[in-house]
Length: 141
Image 1: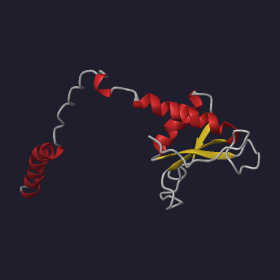
Image 2: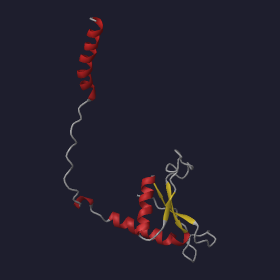
Image 3: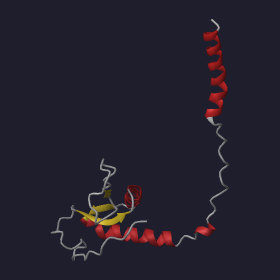
Image 4: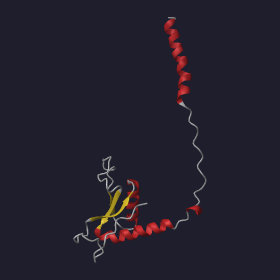
């Protein structure tokens, strides 16, 4: 799902290097390919006790990315949670890679929806006689 972020070298306190010791500063833990994928990662991290945020510009009213060099939607956590978040995402990746999708029973396919009657033939079948009736009334008045 999400690409792994660049490798940050943690300081001795477990936070990424260069943060100046601020444990509440947001740091990027992953880059998702879409806002939907980023939201899934945020929920997954929250389910494992890590508060995360995604920054999807389309969600916030921009129809374009603010950075052409870094495509995707960043997922960020507090610096103090960075190591735990990376561990949770690594475990998620290992878990999803271990699923044998050929053995998963997804059930029977849903029946096809009922056929939709095209509206144009019905409108013509009703509209032409009404138009002729109006024309006859106007002509033979």
